[in-house]
Length: 225
Length: 290
Ligand SMILES: Nc1ncnc2c1ncn2[C@@H]1O[C@H](COP(=O)(O)OP(=O)(O)OP(=O)(O)O)[C@@H](O)[C@H]1O
Ligand SMILES: [Mg+2]
Image 1 (tube, each protein chain N blue to C red):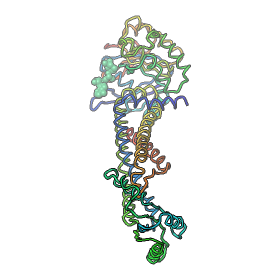
Image 2 (cartoon, rainbow over the protein chains, first blue to last red):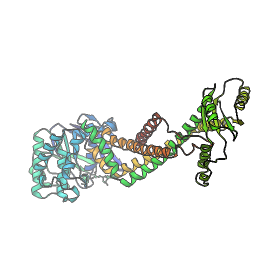
Image 3 (spheres, rainbow over the protein chains, first blue to last red):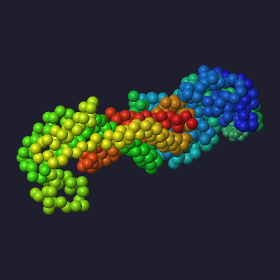
Image 4 (cartoon, chains in turn orange, brown):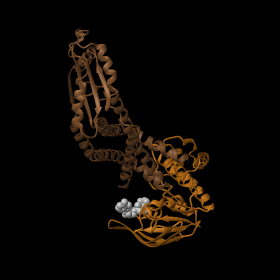
C-alpha cells in the first residue's frame, strides 16, 4: 500500500523529515506517534500529495508520487482519505453538505449519497446535527464531521491526523471501534495520535514512532510521548 | 449530466455570492462592449452610406412659383423611370415647408405660412452615375432637367463621397486596434473578478482538491462564471445599443443628411456575444493559470 525509501523533507532550511524508509502492507493498521513537532503531519501531507516529494522515493496506493502530475492527484486522493488535524471542513455548510462533498465530486448519484451519508452520520452520532452549520458545532463534533467525510467514500487508505484529539474518552473509543470496523473490511489505516490509552487497547497494532523527523518501528509503546 | 448541470449552476451561484463585485464587473463589461458595439454600429452605417452613395449624385430641381402643381406632379411620376435615376423625393410647397420646419426642429414656428408657402416645388433625384464620362453625363442631365416645363433652377452635388470614404478608411484602420483594446479591457476585468472569486473560495477549493475533485470539477464553474459575465454584459450592451438605435434611427433623416441609422445585422450581434463570452472563458483560464 505504501512504500517509502530514504525520503527527506525540509521547510526552507528546517529539516522536518530525515531519511525515512517505511512500508505498509494492504490492510495494515499503523499508529504513528511522536511528540509535537516530530513531523507526523508533514509525513501525512506528503502521503496524499499535499506536499511534494523532495528527496527519496514514495509510492502510495499504486501511485508513484515522484512522478504523479498535479492534474492527476485527484485520482490518488480518491483512494486516500485524510482526517486533517485542523479538520478542514467548511464552516458555512451544514454537516450533511460537508460529508457529502467527496461523494459529490466523484459524481455519485443522489440517492446513494443520501443513503451513505446518513449511515455514516448515524454511526458517529451526528444524525441529529445533519442540518446544523458546522460553525455552530463543538470541536469534538467538528472532528467527527471530518472523520465522517473521510470514511464516507470507503477509501483504500485512511490517514487520520489526531482524529481523537478533541474527543472525550467514550467518543474516542467509539471512534476507534469505527476505524477497526473499516480495517476489518480491508481499509489500510494510519492514525497519528498522542493517546496512550488507545495504543494500550490495541496491542496487536503496529506502532511507528517519529521523533525529530526520524522514524522508528517500535511495535510496543512509544517512548518519548 | 447531472454533474454538468450542478457545476454549471454552481458557477453562476458562486458569482451571485458576491453580488456587488458581479454588478461592477457587469457594468464594466457592458460599458466596454457598448463602446465596441457603438463603434461597430458607426462603421456599419458609414459603410452602408458609402455603398449606397458610391458613384451617386443628387440633382435638386426647383420649379418656378408660377408652376401649376398638378402639371408638375405629372412630370414627377415620369422622372422615376429615367435612366440612372435611383430614387426620387418630391416636395410640394407645403411639404418643403414642413421639412424646413423639421430641420429647424421647434425653434421656429412656420405653421402660419401653411398654404402660402414661399418655397418652390422641389424634386431631389438620386442617381447612380454611369461608369464613363460622368461629367458629360451630369451636364446632360442638368440640361435635360432644365428643359422640363417651368423648371427654374437645377443644381447638383456629388454626395460627400470623399469625406465618407475617408471615414470608412479610418474606421476600417481603427477597427482591429479598437476591438483588441476593448477585448483586453474585458479580459482584464473578468480575469480580475475570477481571481477575486478564487481568493474568496481558496479554502473551499483546497478542500475540494483534498477530497478528490478533479481539475475539471474545480475549474468548470469558474469558466461558466467567466462565460456568464461576458455573455450577460454583452447582452445588456446589445440591448442598450438597440434601444439607442431605435431612438436615433430617424434623428438624422432630415435635410440635408437623409441618413437613417440602421442596426448591424444579427450575425454581428451574435459574433459580439460569442466573442465576449469566449473572452470571459479565456480570461478565467488565464486567471486560473496563475
Ligand atoms: N508550513 C511550514 N513551514 C515551516 N515549517 C513547518 C511548516 N509546517 C511544519 N513545519 C515544521 O515542521 C516540523 C514538523 O511539523 P509537523 O506539523 O509535521 O509536526 P507534528 O508531528 O504534526 O506535530 P503536532 O503533534 O503538534 O501536530 C515542526 O518543527 C514545524 O515547525
Ligand atoms: Mg500534526
